[in-house]
Length: 169
Image (tube, rainbow, N blue to C red; front, side, top):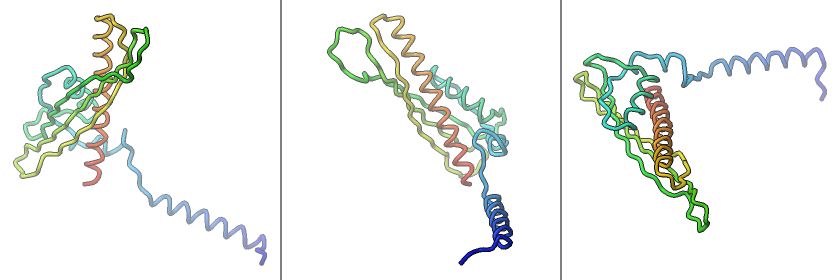
């Protein structure tokens, strides 16, 4: 069975219009911008950092999610832990060793508006690698820098988890 040219053109046009209408009905919400990222409900009050890594996470979150000085704003508190481990043990004469820094950040957002709502808890882990070469000052600086890189990565992951949680509500 052959389709005539006069029937094929309107049929293809109708199919394309229907496909456009179906795709137009889909909704996507951007993570990095848009109404979800700029909602005033994301303005949080932050606890005071106890360590440098907590300070890095608080700075990243307040920059991306907003900060509030209101007494009723939900209180976000973060605990950060880090550990280092050798990536690979080798029996070479080369003093340089690859080290993996692992940072785990736990974010708790507790409501302070007097409701009985449970706090939201998010936990994320991030890693960063650095090379230790036997020079104490350089090794310490590399470890600190790797810890901060991993903390920033964990903060970004926490931010995305918060946005995903709020978009499901």
